[in-house]
Length: 208
Image (tube, rainbow, N blue to C red; front, top):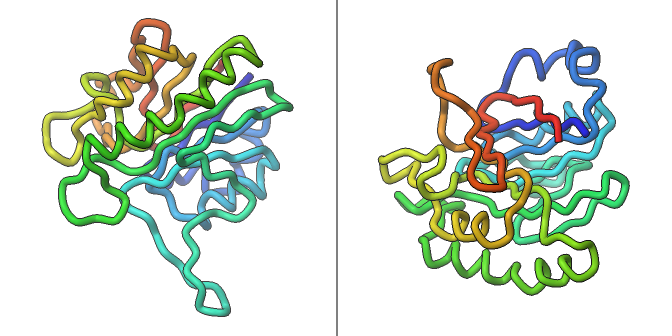
């Protein structure tokens, strides 16, 4: 299975007709946030593949012809606080949006609020273990886990509850964004116990 992971910054290779030729063989697209809806809608229309996403801590708001606010890309599935089973690809996906609180932004949460959202997912994860033989496959967030691909400044600290979820439920992948990686020598991927943790800043091609 091939996944195209996106987050944080629009890439000219993605936002062009070349995207179909370059990434037409992917099975799904997953966005870890901070990308505008039109960008993701373009990817959906060009690749004709399922697109799953969570919002980041910067969310572009647009208005339709009736002046209604639009934040979600049309044709995509918002994973925030959801446990979603993709039957076609036999994949269990779980998502949490936003980052830790560092100012008064709307999509920012305290560590305790993050714990509350993660704990609310536990009953369904336990159900998955009984029905599917595993808790989840892909954990999709905007912010990183504590101590894994995170940073020291208040805006980019990792989330304690995410680290606990990796320890407890052992997803195969944790895809996140939020931490901008400009230096090509800094790795995008970390192996943490049973989980590949990948910062999808820009775009990353992932084979699962």
